[in-house]
Amino acid sequence: MLRRIAFALLLPLLAAVPAWASDSTRIGTVDTTFRLLGRNDRVVVDRYDDPRVDGVSCYVSRAETGGVSGSLGLATDPNRFSIACRATGPVALRGKIPDNEVVFGEKMSAFFKEVRVTRMFDTEKRVLVYLVWSTLSVGTNGSAFNSVTAVPLDR
Image 1: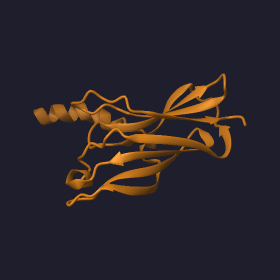
Image 2: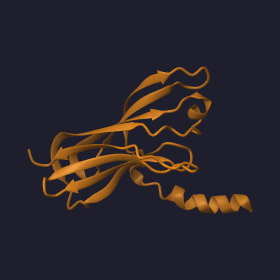
Image 3: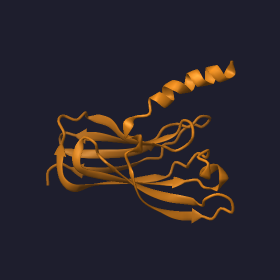
Image 4: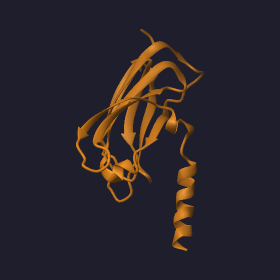
């Protein structure tokens, strides 16, 4: 009975994982802490290309927990990340974009935690603002850790 309830609660969350969750390219990793068993703790850098804005790529660095639990995908990674978005070609909007939209995301634990990138549009200055942040993890108070970057539309 308890399993059915847990499954019923988790199913909508698993089904709600957006298509962009896996649209990243791993640029590289740096080991930070040696672990005797399992992989080392590390910092990873991934690239995400904005799906609605041609010519904009975001580079997100984040900490990953190693050890046995991290190697098995069971560890909750710390809320430590940074973002830098740049024009990597001619910048062009694909139609009208919303003023505020989650454009990238990646799971940081086996259950609920996810790092997300939200794109905001500063219409007055014609600047795309990208904010990286994380969703709450079960049993914690969440985190205010975040990072922001901006890409101007007109040069």
